[in-house]
Image (cartoon, rainbow, N blue to C red; front, side, top):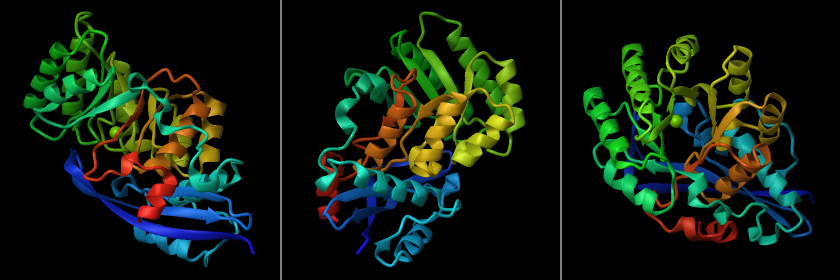
Length: 332
Ligand SMILES: [Mg+2]
C-alpha cells in the first residue's frame, strides 16, 4: 500500500461579489486534497486556480487528480497544471511534516501574522474610504484598492479622498488587474507621483499590473518615467513567467500568489537565487492553501519588507476561516 489520495471539490460564495477589472467574482471553486500514508499520517493540500490568471480549470485539476487512481506516487505534475502542482506538492510536504497528523499543527499557524504585516483589502469604488478606516482600526497599515473598475476621473478623485483620510504612515497599493490603457496608466502614475510628493499624505507603495501581461516593455518604460513603483501580478502568475520576466530585465516588484505559481520548491529556488522584490499574495484560498502559501512566504522572506497580501479573510459567506484544515476537510 502506498499513499492514498482523496479529493473533495468545494465551492464558496463571496459575501459580496469581488469586483476587479475582470468583472465580478461570485463563487470561488477549488479542490481540497488529502494524502494519507500507511502510518495514518495525513497531509492536506489545496488546488485553487484563478482562470483569468491562466491557471488550469478546476475540471482539469480534478481530472488529473482522479487519474492518480487513489494512489499517489509523486510522479511529475505537468507544467500546464500550476495550481495542481502547488496543491499536491504542499500536501506531500504537509505529510512529511512530523506533526502533521490530523493537520492540527501546521508549521506556520495562519494567525501568527499580525494585521500590521498583512495588507488589508478594500473594495473598488466609493465605499473604499469607509472600509479603509475599519481596516486601520483592525491594525492594518497597508491597504490595497482595486482600480480600473469605474470611470478613471471618479477613481482618481477617490484616491485623493483616500490619501486624505489615511494617516501619513499608511501605505496604499493600487491594483488595476491589467485593465488600463497606456494613457490611463500614465494618468494614474502621475496622480500617484503627485500623492507621493506630499509627505503629509499616505504613500502609494505601488501600482499593480497597470497594463495587460503582453505589454512588459511598455510597463518597463513606464517604470523609468515615474517615481511610483510598478508591480507585476498577472504577468507573473507562474514560476516560469517570473523567471521569464526576470530574464527580460524586470527589476520592479513581483506579486507572487504561491497557490497558482506552480511548484513551491521552484518558487523558493527563484526567490533564493535572484533575491527579487517579492510581495506575497493570496489567491482567495481556504485555510489549507493559505497556510502552505504563508509558509513559502516565510521561507523566502523571513522578515518581509512589505506587507503580505493575505487580507482575504472574512470575504466569504461562510465560517470556513475559523476552521482547522482537518475540520474543513470533514465539513465537505
Ligand atoms: Mg493583483
